[in-house]
Image 1 (cartoon, rainbow, N blue to C red):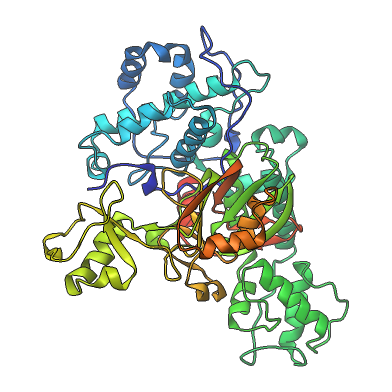
Image 2: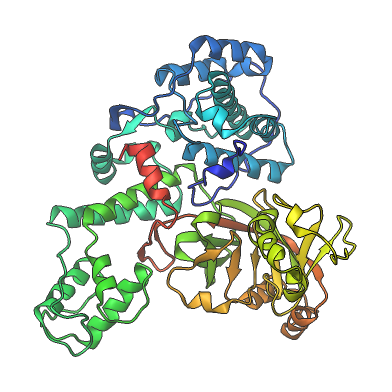
Length: 556
């Protein structure tokens, strides 16, 4: 059985930056800060979780660890308000908040070199014999131990980050409601709330932009919503004339994709451009033709669109107030990489992300090394599930795929005569693919160390970039224009010319070069957002994470 790790529940946060306002030792005495709490007026009677914590276990847990005594009042108050419901676990899995918080702790550790918060949690989650079965079969002792470890770590984290600053931290209830939220009341509150309500909302720019879009779409809903589009033919294209053209014009005017003043039944050039604009916003091929796929997107109800906006606003509760000046952002549902320099959008490129079975995780890292003409060290899961079955049928498979077996020290192993049939769960050596045109990583790899062992790389499989839906990889991120990124990273190094980079990519000998300073990389899951041009975008929930968040927060 798999051990309980946060990898089993993909984090839903857009991206997670650590507050850099301090890394102080624990404050002495009681933790007396005023917390910003969640607005409880938007709660339903429905409980957040059916799992309950024993109040006596809580007191024993706190008094067993003297470092928790300064936080006792806050911890006990948190659980009293929620009638001792568990905060970090549902009946079947870690909550979104748990995976978000664990990612923040990882970032904190990476930034400050302080492992005192994450390491104890890591040891608990990887404790010998601890499996998903033992937790989710309601082993109460294990449940309570992990639950309280997360809660107490949160208060320690808040004290470390906010100690000595004028800022007030947000209470756990601000992130983790004690009851399901009332969607309709929350929607109305967000749309009509006075300025005083802002204390209950995130302040980052991504949230603010989505709130403006929410207000606009709520107004559309009040005026009757969006018109239904039906076609009396397979497609509508430039030059066609029908009642369907008038309906499309009306729809695109309401969504502000079309600024034309005409409402005639002729499909004009300006209408074709408006259709392309709409298709771009929802992630379709920009044909300017109204086909069945475009109609399906147009016929998403205004209520569905509003709910998607609301879910992404909920995600942003864990997002801090500011972003770095320079960073890379990969948005998984969009299949795009975006580069920002001095807080301004510079350029973007297509990417291929993990399929559902190997879904790319959501996290932050720092791009610090570029490997030209790389070896590909094959992950154990691929060896077990894909390579071993091939070797059992064909013992020459490795050489045919330009692969080799090497010892832990990198020394090649002679595989002649190996009985591959005796291996089922793995092999006692490393299998790697040599540099070359067929290498799975292509000609260059970009490393940003992380616990998921995910990185960005070139690929010999270029055809995937032409697909609308690009979730094909084993979990890493394939780049459509890897050389462009390499040139950007080394733009200030006069020796790393475009020609030199091409030479290194084609050399056939691996060479690793450090990136100084390293560049933050954010792997995100955002199905609705307002982009740098002010366009409201929608994408498919390719991993089902919107559905998971909706069930967890709103009980849908």
